[in-house]
Length: 469
Image (cartoon, rainbow, N blue to C red; front, top):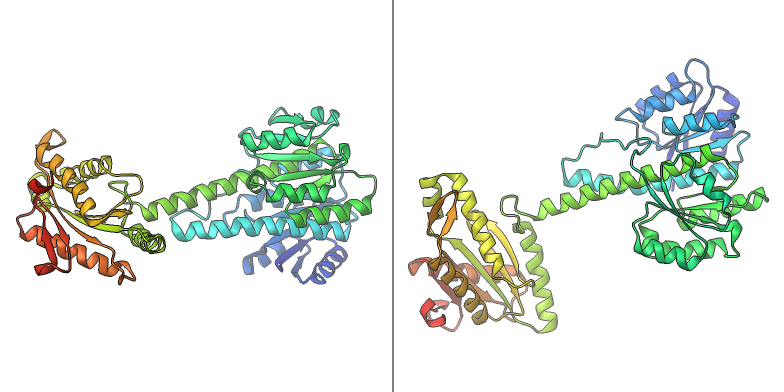
């Protein structure tokens, strides 16, 4: 996967070295020797990732990162800080600035490549769901996640090095649950909603790649990001393992001896991304719900109905089952609006829907078709059985009035029903026949249910309520 990367370093030699290596891996790379030049290039073409030197004249990397992470145009760009500064205070400062990763000079090219790929994969996943959310709603693309999430995170740690307990409880910010067996670890993450899972392989004989591969294909592995602690004894082996783990889908992997500040930075980065991803997913689900739901009554809308009935037709034909469709029209609804106003009319629609839903089975799909018209899809239900159900509902409306905003109103409806035939290939003919039956119900004086049947005169059989109830 290629991407556009911006390298910022006041030493032109470092820019050339890093850029050359990244270009050899088919990345599109721009270079800048100061932050002013960097901003000019970013304004021209937004990069997918920034590699940033910490110490530069005029404006250092920490200040520049802080500025970028609050800018609505650029806050979502991952930043890798490259520096010779190893003090824990600098790493804490990087955490506060929203830095996503931290590499010490001289930079190991292979390690750089792995970190770049990991962050780009993470960004791509976020971008995909964010773009879908933006298309489906008015969700603001300018909404940035907190650089340092304030909510306490729940973290599961698998390991036998109990000195890690103190190391991970560095700030008392997060809640850690420690497990010393694979079985207890898997059991608890399947039962609890953890924000992050961490595995220390230095304490176990588990083969890391096999363990992580099984984790990533599990249900919880797809929902809970995984961080891995590696053994630092063999730097070359660690880099190879790091690449393999990130290729498998591990969110981050690092040495257990990096110190509390960098550990905190890496944990905060993963939690920040997870919280933001959850926010996007929640927004997407809400957008999907709004796209398929009628805002006034809360039932499905016409858009959902069209998709639902097509699926129902396929299922009915595949399983050789009956399928009936009913169209409802509230009688003289315009008079209600004209006499009492649209606020009362809206309340009538809500109460009407509630009463209908109280009498339906879970398998039925009730939708607002438009205005005061509604559609009911009844799987595995014959036309005559459907008419019996709807006639019973109509009897309730005729017996009991509707109370809306302290007004007792008489509300009834007319309905037409059709049944799926062998020749139906889509919902259009099914709706057309139900609509003809509905028209016949209106012509018959309303407050009744009519069934479409092709062998009878006028293609409609009238079944008076008294004959059914």
